[in-house]
Length: 85
Image (tube, rainbow, N blue to C red; front, side, top):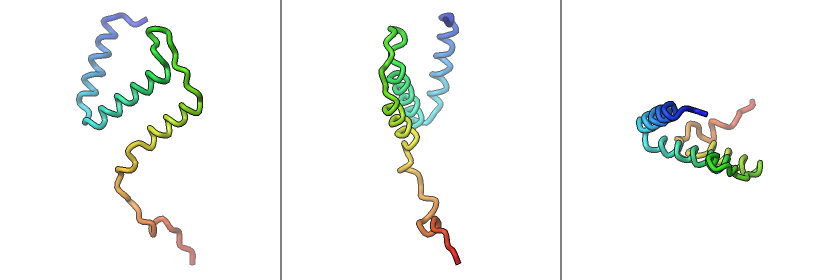
């Protein structure tokens, strides 16, 4: 068990670090915390979440692909084609 003073300092440090991030990165932190909460349940009350392996994989893929549609296209379709002579 973590002493209350140490837990408070860790929380303050986390808040300070997150507050220095841009808004869209802060949203990622919130989403990740929500994911952890859903994945592991409310540990304080001893209620673990019941996620199937498929649900976990789906969530993982969704998080990994998040924001990719906003990325600039670095290569054209012609760049991606391999030319053989």
